[in-house]
Figure 1: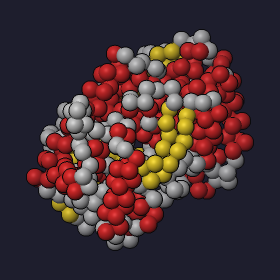
Figure 2: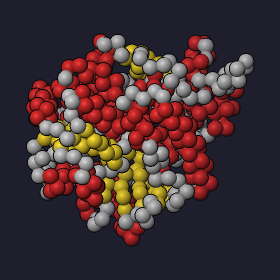
Figure 3: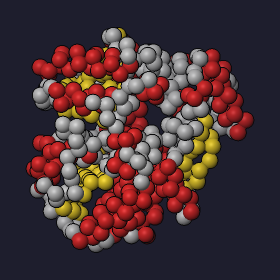
Length: 481
Ligand SMILES: [Mn+2]
């Protein structure tokens, strides 16, 4: 069933905030917390906001980070404390959370809630913007919901607005509306700007303006994908050479970033990128992705990736994808020494893994099916980055006419499938998360879900063929192929 709460419910911001206040009041009465958070950038930022806010209230807090919240994780969570607070997930797992905890658990989430026989399971302490007609895909992230909760606990938590924005950017909530944050995200932004923590300006929006050497800045660009350049280092080098843009500082030999270039060269590069997109018939709304709002965190070192909102989010993703979510959490909690240096090293390693992964797929090739592209990376690409690589292939290897499904094999013998699409496909009806969720309800042992544009699923290996056939069917339906 294609049912989206966010679109069915009348918008009620007041109701949302009063529910948050009630939620915060109940939390004040409790202690011995377990904060359970999702492992991506938004999840880590949500986790840090919750932990900080609770600790500032003098509460005892443990935490656990999970890649996905599966039923089998519940006993592990129960061992850690008495009051369970799930952030950036939980809505999609209400069925088994209710089964395990009854009324006694807390969820702050923005993902589509699970429906059992068309109904959402009743949970007493469950806050999700979708329940109030507020779009959880574009105007509030897990971190955003958690930030408003923190603010309801104590007004002094305004400094956590920075993390609220990091989460929104990590979930790519700035990819619509002329590439700016809107709705309740805007409220968070206003709070950060008012307290002189955040600056908003217009610039080239590609990841890595501040911290990536120019070649990887363009090679790893995914928002927008740069035709012929994304995932193609040789083309990038030729492109920059043609523009007479130096790659290194001639005196210090330091690799230059976009931010290091003189203003004139920045302008030239920006217009050359616009021309490239135009020549490749990029639709106008997508050209707009190139230039837009960028969010700067004024309390950070200007040469650090943490200075730029998107790079902050990228760094967190690099940590968790390398199975070091504890580093992501410590950076969010304010570590700028040991944890921070490790995060920088992981980010470099992440970029290297992406490069190798792209190389692998280029050699192996991508299979084209009726309603999706497909490759099976076996054990050659880690399951944590196979989805990112799949998404990057839209730059130069596959066309934007269907989603892509990529497989990686887990150590336990199960298979991780990652689906990626483009905003154009979502406009045409693609909902990968919806398809995966439906399939997980049909096929025993399959668990999955996520966003319309990106989602993941765990599949027992003997169910793979059934799942692929069902995907074929669902995507055909969604895209009317
Ligand atoms: Mn999220």
